[in-house]
Image (cartoon, rainbow, N blue to C red; front, side, top):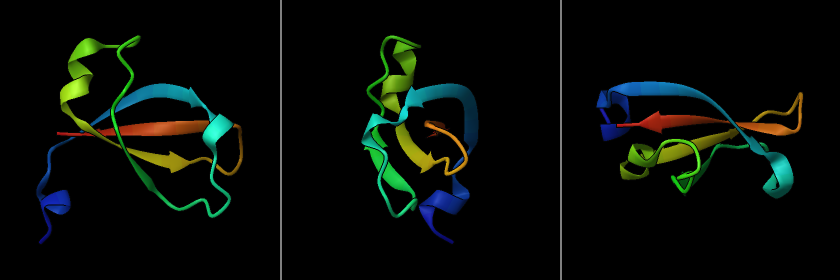
Length: 63
């Protein structure tokens, strides 16, 4: 198992503007830089999944 699979997942219903939307639609890994929402989230890594059906990203925070 990978560390990803063994992680405890905490999902937040945070939506981020799709201005940086990538054409492939594959998962893109970002460092959480969303201090305007919840400062403590900054200690997690964010896996950002493109929502093809709309102009937003879902952010899944992985602890």
